[in-house]
Amino acid sequence: MKIALMDSGIGLLPAAAAVRRLRPDADLVVSNDPDGMPWGPRTPEDLTRRALAVAEAAAAHHPQALIVGCNTASVHALPALRARLEPEIPVIGTVPAIKPAAAGGGPVAIWATPATTGSPYQRGLIADFAQGVQVTEVPCPGLADAVEQADEAAIDRAVAAAAALTPPDVRAVVLGCTHYELVAERIRAAVQQPDLPPLVLHGSAGAVAAQALRRIGVAPDPAAAPTGRLTVLLSGREGTLPEAALNYAEGRLLAAVSPTR
Image 1 (cartoon, rainbow, N blue to C red):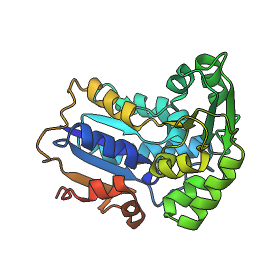
Image 2 (cartoon, rainbow, N blue to C red):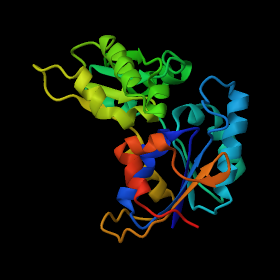
Image 3 (tube, rainbow, N blue to C red):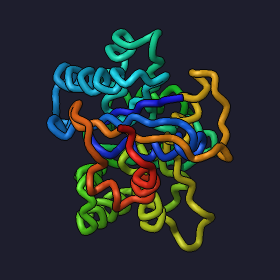
Image 4 (cartoon, helix red, strand yellow):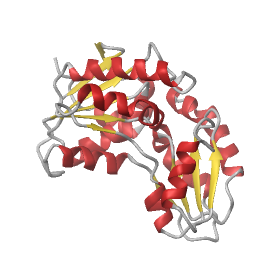
């Protein structure tokens, strides 16, 4: 069994780690694009071109499914990726977990990149899944870049700035960028009010990993022997996980696996 994941950078780590936990015996192909990152400022057409190249590099390793571990790429490139790869390789996109967050009744905050905050895409998800729930959209300038570089001081500044824009009575925070899941506990600590019940954070990694297994007809088996191997592709070239990835538990989990040769 082999599952591929793609992103411009290390935002795919949470989903990759989630797959590893559900199926320790699954081989993983992690396809990044250091030559083209970041994807966020690119036009939709340019982003789609880069995403297709990264996906095709992963597809050359014959995975049974491909996870798009990036919200921005899922918004702009998912139709093109599915047209290119399916039905041979199911493609699973990443959608912010607004629906389960709103199911708790709110108030809810959605932390996302400035480009996504207030976008028709995000507003559409709110209209579809959060009617009647108080929702605050919180832009997080610089947070994804800081996480990508594992810049501790920049992460602290970006988290603090976003927390200052988050209403104090919020009961759930949607992590609307896959990078944010790597610093989830720092976000919780910044937003949690001492006199309120524990804050609930909603990421997408677990749901995306489970959906990938469903698409290929494989049941989770966390107790399986940890025989899964790892292949890392850097703009199509085989390499190793970026050094910044090892600053996060998810990256260290993947690095503990011997790369495929």
